[in-house]
Structures are given as C-alpha cells and as structure tokens.
Length: 99
Ligand SMILES: [Zn+2]
Image 1: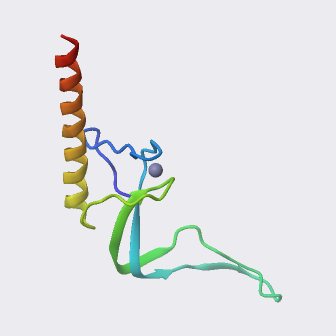
Image 2: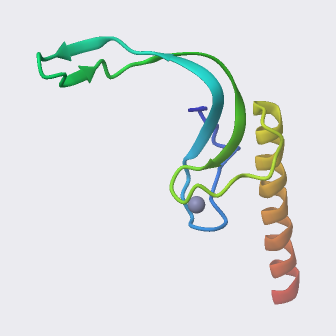
Image 3: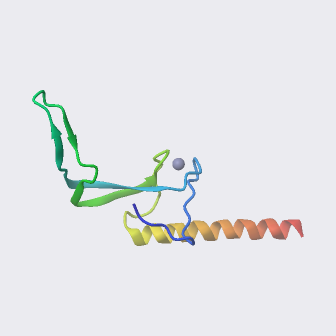
C-alpha cells in the first residue's frame, strides 16, 4: 500500500473512498505455515512475503474501480496531482461565478 502524502489526496470519484489498492499480477507469495492438523486444517502467518510480479493497476480499495493511469507510482502521483488541479479549477470557476 503506497503511503499517500497530504498533497496527493485520493478520493474515489465513484464512492468517495480514500484508500488506494495496488493490484499485482504474477507475483510469488511465500507464507509460513503456522498450524497444521492431522485432518489438514491449516493456518498461515499473517505477513506473507511477496516476490516479483508487476503492478497491473491501481484501484479504489472499496468499490474496486480502476484508476485510469499507467500502472506505476509516478503515473499515479501525476494522476492524483491532475485531479487536485482539476478540483482547484472547479473551485476557482465557482468563485468567479459567485462574484
Ligand atoms: Zn470507490
């Protein structure tokens, strides 16, 4: 989960959620088996190690709507900045109207 800085605020256009989820494809997950019964019941450690893979997309953690940017952190940051600017422009237009 990327740590989003204050000036890179995400707000899902569809549902308003503020958490971004990274979808990784083709990764290998290593998980320590911490419990196994003779019946085959089993449990894993809560902190799996994820190796390799590549980011497929960023999306809203709640409604899973994909963020329309290239799948890399720089593109995500740029997209968030663009959103911020678009929002500012909207606000400025509103202010002009009300004057
Ligand atoms: Zn959403």
